[in-house]
Amino acid sequence: MTYDVARIAVLLVVVAASAICDIRSGRIYNWLTYPAALVGLGLAVGYEGMEGVWTALLGLAIGFLPMLVAWVVSGTGGGDAKLMAAVGTLALPEHTLQILVYGLIVAATMAVALMIWHGRVWVTLQRVWLAVVAVVWGGQNRREPIAEAHADTIQPRVQLGVAFFLATCWTLVEEAVGTSMWDAAT
Image (cartoon, rainbow, N blue to C red):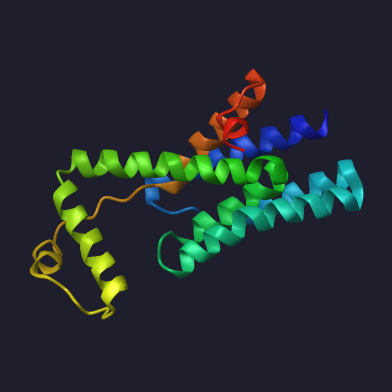
């Protein structure tokens, strides 16, 4: 088995399992992400030696750091960041950023679909406006009645595990076909 086949096989299992966990429980578990990252590093050292480890660590950083920033500002969960770290060790730098960007595109599409499905477009636009006003004019506590009026409603959540699974599949299909939206954009 070649390094690429082993990496891709493990990558697909990890992102599929994370999507299932995220759908079922709304969480991506450490018991999935930590071993996946270690397997990615183990495959790298086994097939490529220390040079492979450095490449896998660079992939880990590319996947983890942007998601860490998003987690710190409360945009995502910590499991999402750890999932992208594991993806980085398996997808390597060549595809990690692509999977991350495609995943965010898929997540944004899912968010719009959820807003429409749950009839929350207007409420969401009002909340975005309030956030923009707070950033531009300062004052984190500038709340309008809309925030309190909808505080008791269920907030639909985009499951990034699903988005990253779809993004990984999207990236791998583009790789197999030999043409990519990513290549056209870069």
